Length: 337
Image (cartoon, rainbow, N blue to C red; front, side, top):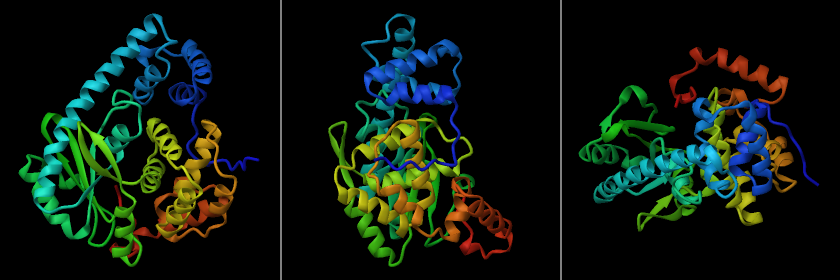
C-alpha cells in the first residue's frame, strides 16, 4: 500500500500537472494529459516554464502528435538539441583544463542530468554548467576557468571557507558556469567528500567519459534547489523523476534517506518525493516518507527551506529563526545561492 504524504509546496496548477504528465508519463497517460492541456493553452504563447517541457513532450509523444503541434514542438526539440550540442562541445576543454591543474571535478545539475538520464539531449535545455571540486582545489579551479576564458562574476557568487560555496562565471556565447565546493557538509568533511566521490557516476558525452555526481546526491541537491526558489522550473520535477528511476535497489533508497538526515536535506527531499508521488504517480517504497517525517529537523533546514515546512509548528519555528538571522554570527547564517 502506498503511503501518501502531501507536500506543502509547490502548488502546481492543473495545466502544469497535465503538461508534466505529457512530458514524463507512459504514452497512453501522456497522450490523455496532452489532450487535456491543449484546449486551454497555445504552444506559441505558453509561459517559459511550460515551453521548457516541449522538447520532452515531443520526444515522449513523437508518434502521436501529428499536425501543427508536431511541427512546432519538433522545432523546439531541434533547437534544444543543437544548443545543447554546442554547449557540451564547449564543456570538454574546460574539464581538460581542470584536469591539467590537478583538479578532480564532478559534473552536476543540467549537463549531468541531460547527458546522463534523458533519452537524448534534445529533451531539455542546459542552462548552466555546474562543477563540483574539493575545497583544497577551489583556488586552482577558479584559475583554470579563467585561463579557459571564463570571467568570474563575484556579485553572483557566495560562500565562506568550509561552507557551501559557488563561484559564478560568464563564458563565450553568453554561457554561464558555477564551480561549487562543500556541496554537502558533515564532519569529518574528508569522509563526506570521499563518500560523494565514491558515489560518482560515469557518463559518456561526445565519446568522452566524464564523472558526474551520483544520483542520490544529485537528487538531494536538486530537491534543495527546487525548494529554495519561489517558482521552481517545472523540468526539475521531470529531472527528479528520472533520478528516482535510477535507484535500483533497497540499498540505494536507504542511502538516500540516510544522506538526507546526515546532510540536513530532510525537508526538501520529503517534499520533492511527495510532489512526485502526488503529481506524477511515482511509486515509492512505503517506508520512505514516513521515515523522513519521523526525523528531527535542524535549525539550518528550517532557515534554508522554510517553503518546505509542512506543519504550522514548523512554519512558525522557521519564521522565528528567520527573524533572528540579522543577529546571528555570519558563519552560521544560511548560504544564499
